[in-house]
Image (cartoon, rainbow, N blue to C red; front, side):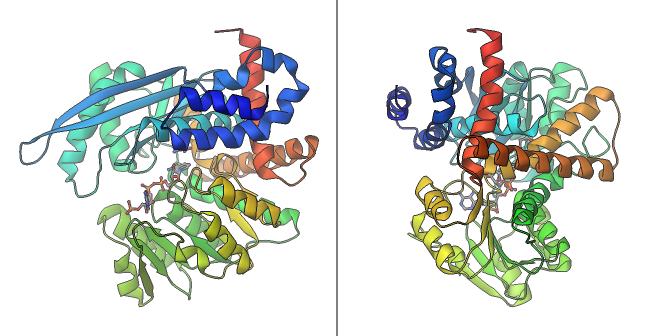
Length: 450
Ligand code: NDP
Ligand code: 2IT
């Protein structure tokens, strides 16, 4: 067997699933040296088994909009791998949600969760429902209809969903209320819950904060720090907001944010007051990013449809933190970043950088961290929320934040150690894929062919 043979098998079995094949290819190539050293892993077909969801649930979601019209959406849950713990991973509500997107996310989640050191398997779910422009009542009715089916497939020891794109505190509240009503029990079946009804302090902040902690550890390796660095951030949702917040707190300068309509470039940099405006705009008023540019008199660039390069990534900066969605940085963007002197790219989103773009960055010595390592603080803190729920107690924010620091440092060091062991020192991509894969593979090996 060669990596190409496995990849062509996976292609045959999953035609028309470009996102899933992209995530699969990256991992197949990275973990190949592990298979060469472990013929037993090859005989047991562990990598191929990991690329096959344990279960993929697809269901119809019907609900009534405010005008009384019947709406039809598709709901999914991909239960990818439960070798090291209950399925765990977010729910995405976005019109671009397909089985391919959810399978790529679920596959990455398996390896990411393994890296956290917390016993969690991997899953992902969601719907093609678009929360944009919907009233609160419509979002509630949709969440209730969605949970009406999902409730049969999840549970606090079985599968614990959380948020992702389009699913934040409001949606988790409605989903949790619906689950509790259907099952007549109060358990930690979802994470990202509100403080006061089972949620953990710092969960909301954890992905963005963890991303910047991870970047700081990468820079420390080079006797450097984020202080004084100009940072590009994309997105303006949960991950982007808290990445910007931590950059500000550590003395860096975040100069951009974006949404699906375009991006703002604020040369003076975000302050906490400006960020509070953005949070209110995006989380409460659910408005467009241009309002920020109007208020603070900075540049707004509307994003062209089918753009070949995104001008956001052509702004001179030391660090880049893509925090919106998959494939937002292509090879051209990577070359622009490089030309302008980029030192570090930390992925906050899942798979925001294409394989070609990653190769450009790594080959030219940019410090690059894959999302499955640098955005793992979110799911890790979900794991801490589960632990608090099982124990029936709540930790302080200092307690959770210090654990988050420890987890990000541990992931960082684990990636470096695995990369070194396999002859690719400093390569966080290969290190993350190998370390995550090894943990899951050993558990599957021990548990037999099931
Ligand atoms: P949110 O829904 O809070 O924010 C998403 C942001 O990205 C919004 O600004 C949105 O713009 C923009 N965006 C989404 N899709 C597109 C698109 N197709 N084109 C352009 N812009 C887009 O999501 P999160 O911040 O939670 O998630 C962002 C990324 O981080 C995702 O890749 C997610 O998988 C990943 N992630 C999230 C974690 C979490 O804990 N929430 C944990 C780990 C990773 P608009 O407002 O116009 O929709
Ligand atoms: O991609 C991710 O890691 C998330 N969306 C968070 C998942 C979780 O279960 O907290």
